[in-house]
Image (cartoon, rainbow over all chains, first blue to last red; front, side):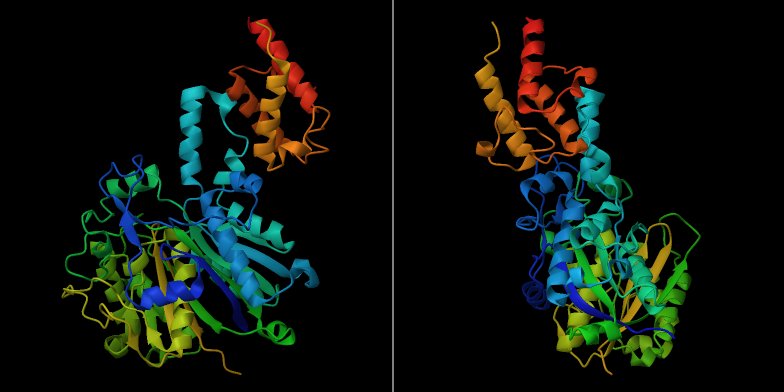
Amino acid sequence: MKKRVVITGMGLVTPLGCELEAVWKKLLEGESGITPLVDPELNCFRSKIAGQCRDFSPLPYVDSKEEKRIDRFAQFSYVAGIRAVEESGIDFSKENPFRCGAIVGCGVGGLGEIERQDAKLDKCGASRVSPFTIPKIMLNAASSHLAIRFGIHGVSYGVATACASANNAMIDSYRLIRDGDLDVVITGGTEAAVSKLGLVGFAAMRALSERNDEPSKASRPFDADRDGFVIGEGAGILVFEELEHAKKRGARILGEFLGYGVSTDASHITQPDSEGVYAGAALSAAVFSAGLNPEQIDYINAHGTATKLGDVAEVGAIKRAFGDCAKSVAISSTKSSIGHLLGGSGGVELIFSLLAIRDNVVPPTLNLENPDPACNLDFTPLVAKERRIKYIVSSSFGFGGHNACVAAGAFTE
Amino acid sequence: MAADRKQIEAKVIEIIADQLARDKEQISGASDIANDLGADSLDLAELMIAFEENFDIDIDEDKVGEISTVNDVVDQICKVLDSNE
């Protein structure tokens, strides 16, 4: 028999901060986490803005020795993961460690460290390259550090499906618990790619917004004047737990993971299928695998990165999956506030969606002042909207053609 | 000029303390870097790079295996510095 999977802890690191409730409040109030890049090494390229976690420090969760051994992307997930575990109240020393897991998505791993060590190699020679290079850059380090921290001996691995990484990680975690293999998984996604190569690489694709003079206005999903996504960084990590296991230890249940849909465009390495055929199939599968119908979905946390092609394709996907209900479902892109956290986005967005369920409020799509006529759905422009929310879908679509949508709902017996 | 051993030892202890997040007071010439101070193989490799960069020297790979205490490090650095003169 399939097990039910609930969420018992949530932690995040975002450009709006690391305190869950404070971040949520800022999000609802329409605050932007997008700021000018000030580092002279970073603000010399086409896009000079980003959603940076400027005040982030991994202390006191790591000592200064550990800090040097863990790259920024894995520090984000480490801190978010510890916060999530703290909230869940779970004591891993009392768990069967082989029935616990850590699965964390990440798009590119330690891009900044790759740059630093490559520069060192060029300048000083091979003998000066740090022995921590590989253990820092490997994107699976995010899950390993959490496993080490909590003595988790069941499965742990990284998931890389670009911007869909977090959703794919959470889908794997859900399945492992649902099928009875594990009781608890620490899961979600993380990214720290606001680096030279990150900025230059995405800019070379003309994927990044260059609205450098108005950082808070730059991330404009579904707006006619959008000009690309704003790169962001951060992590969203959750504790997934088998329902009876959670009940037995008296855990506070924050929501239920109900289903998922995945598909692959298999057409172009970066361009989404313009009609959103395959993304729509994933969205549809997420709804139906949750045992729901489209009219029961109250909120869609859209992928909505604010690229010209991606947003229109997503509108197509929603229309295909939701049919007549597409016009009535509340939708928003929280990337309008914090930018695109790439491999970290799905984790943060599921957390936002669960908070939307808790508080019955839809977070806004900032900067949606002049809607693209091709994006004619209810994208919750500019201000948050109260609405009864029981069921949500959160979408992520990654370069490589990866479509991963998850469905969640308020927990009821 | 022969290298000033006391100064070198102080610098070596400073580097180790920083790398391993230890108080300098906990470290003496006799401290075993792995067994007493908790360095793993990656820490040892990183420390060698830090010593090389700090003193602008190259420590022979073959000699690295002979190093276990702070005194061993200082001896090795002094030897290289003296031979560089």
